[in-house]
Length: 102
Image 1 (cartoon, rainbow, N blue to C red):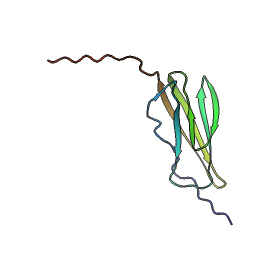
Image 2: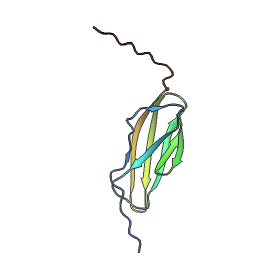
Image 3: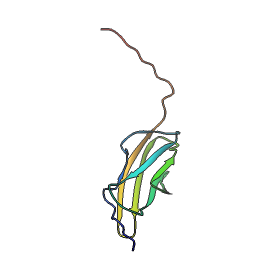
Image 4: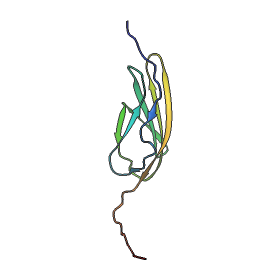
């Protein structure tokens, strides 16, 4: 006998955090409960969906912009989907800080 728990509260961790393009970053699925879960990621890059698997995905966003992400998690008794829009910005190469006393 195999007992499975349904997937509850599927989320994409820290999706609202701005990522730096051209540097490897991780995107992670979180959930409150569930067993024997398969994770499928669909990330829109250049108007095409790229597919990834696993609870955590590591990748580089080559250009700055907004990326639509869909996460589907499923097991033998349940399926959940969540979406978010991740923002990637170019890294800072040079910054000047001017401090003046009033």
